[in-house]
Amino acid sequence: MAIQKIITEPNKILRQISKNVDKVGKEEQQLMDDMLETMYDAKGIGLAAIQIGIPKRILVMDISKNEEKNDPMYFVNPIIKNKNSELSIYEEGCLSVPNYFAEIKRPKKCEIEYLDYYGQKKNLLAEGLLATCIQHEMDHLEGILFIDYLSKIKKTMIIKKLSKQKDRPDRIIV
Ligand code: GNR
Ligand code: NI
Image 1 (cartoon, rainbow, N blue to C red):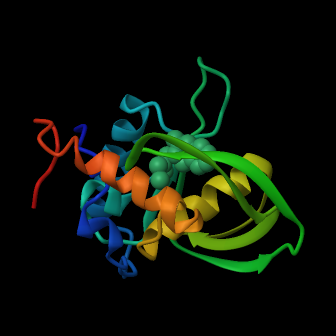
Image 2 (tube, rainbow, N blue to C red):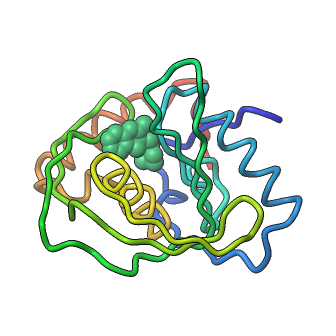
Image 3 (tube, rainbow, N blue to C red):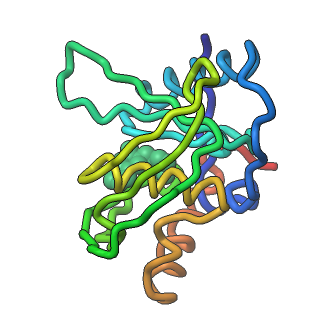
């Protein structure tokens, strides 16, 4: 297992559309292990493969509050089958947009279909933080970041400030 570098804005890689996974094999499981380790190391509650530079439709999440017991979740090729018309607001952050947070409005509940760690087809009815996080992660698969929902002026300001940190040595420059 290995901790990977998380790509931050501004970087075109984050705008790529991720590709469906044909088969959940050893390589994908290894990737999910690395993603989970990277996510825990960064103290995040979710991570999409594209955030470590891999354009595959794979997400990992752990929204458990319990510090002693982890509750990792793996999603391959997730699709949203149903979105509740009721919206809820949550203050979101993103490991690819470090140190910025904003209130984002999204459907309160959603039903998703996906493949699990073993490639088994699953369904999940998500609400609350789980629903918010899954939708945030699924946006990454389409190259969308939460700052895209902000006003143009706010978004530009955030990207400008992040790009000033460009010479940080831990940044991936492609
Ligand atoms: O760690 C994260 N926290 C978070 C908080 C509110 C809504 C979404 C998230 S996801 C984020 C990790 C991340 O960037 N995933 O892509
Ligand atoms: Ni994110």
